[in-house]
Amino acid sequence: MIDERFDKMVDYVIENFDFEKVHSVMKFLNWSWHAEGVPKIQTIILRSREMLIDTFKRSIKENKSFTIASGGFRCYCEKYIDDNGAEKRFLHMEFILTDCDADEEYIDED
Image 1 (cartoon, rainbow, N blue to C red):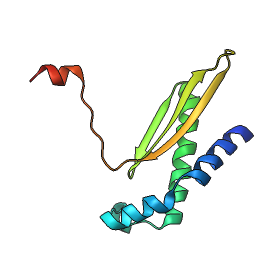
Image 2 (image 1 turned 90 degrees about the vertical axis):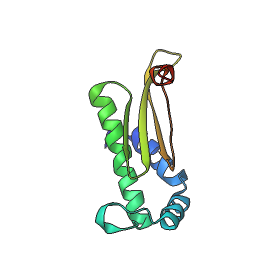
Image 3 (image 1 turned 120 degrees about the vertical axis):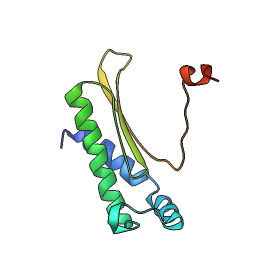
Image 4 (image 1 turned 135 degrees about the vertical axis):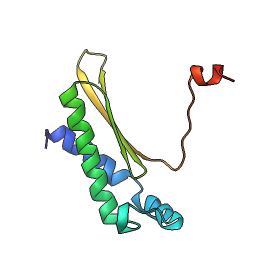
């Protein structure tokens, strides 16, 4: 992969994310991925790892924060500068059941 620190970040997210809860919700809602139906938990974990890696690589390549979302998952890698002026990355993954947003232009149309 990219480097040892990045490997540790990905491993930490994968090891501490509640995939069993996500899988339970997906089964309950009959949430399928393409024609394969509700994915097995191992497939969910594998795809999540791939998304985290892709998100990080795109953040490095484009030299900015980057987000990838698919199948209910959203992964993002935030680029920031720490207090010592060093460039750092923050890796995050979430599973989203529902979402809503609005901007001022939409609100002003009412």
